[in-house]
Length: 196
Image (cartoon, rainbow, N blue to C red):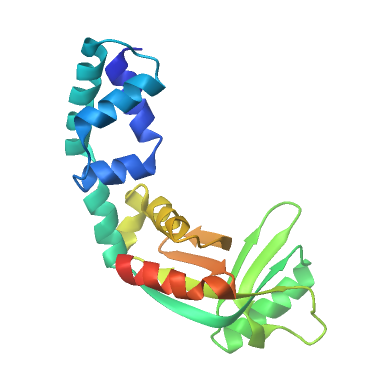
């Protein structure tokens, strides 16, 4: 694999580099030297080949499309939410029924061995005491989110940049639901207001 191909691969594996290139805030000569050093590619020819590849990649990035999808996304925050992990099917069905009747947030992911639910406190029966108290956010995006790569990656990267820890996250078609600790609510809202 040549220097240019290796550099393209290096950048494709780094969302922050792709975003910086799309935002046109990159010194391509300096980045080419850095990548050449990282890839152990010596010589002016390698650095020049990498720089040319980077400039071409900048023209191909889809950052604007991701940002457009997020700008068309709305969100709702649920301050009194809970994450339940490893719960049984009977309780899951009961919670789903109560949530449906009260039009409350209910998001579930099920694997072969486990069920995890994000819902609001008001849905929980009194006998359930093993849950994590969180704030939940439900994002509603336009349908073309499904054909736009990297939207959720951009969201999680920006939240991570603000030191927000996502406790749980589910994404299904146009809806993305995630939970954060109550300490991270302010930073999450700031991030979402910047993106959405």
